[in-house]
Length: 166
Image (cartoon, rainbow, N blue to C red; front, side):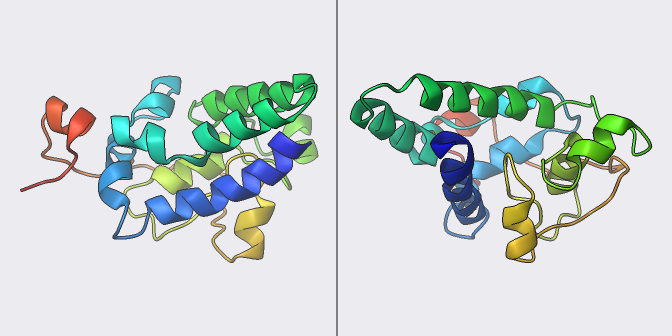
């Protein structure tokens, strides 16, 4: 519960910070994906690994908890959902599974809206939509967007090590 809910809220704010002018250069590489697929989950700069909340908070809790088994289960569930969010395996709006989970769980449709080319700053949450709904950053649309990704003139070396356009 701790890793799945509390850390999810911390991630929401961490992700919003990545979209500020101050940190966008670190996160922009992740948004160069033009097709939602599980490989897009890991399209990041090396700097992202050090600035993302997951690295620090998970290490801390795994160290502090006397038995981190359930915490690690929550981390694993978040990782699995992250792969799913970046996929094109989206439940149909008329399906039972959609009706059961669409109100509270972030679906691939929701995260694709975050990655769409004309994103106006929406859908930052990882596991739960509630954070976006509370902070008025939720954009709803049952359809996958037509255009994904941001343009980048960075070389592969720049994308990995120095994601700044000169």
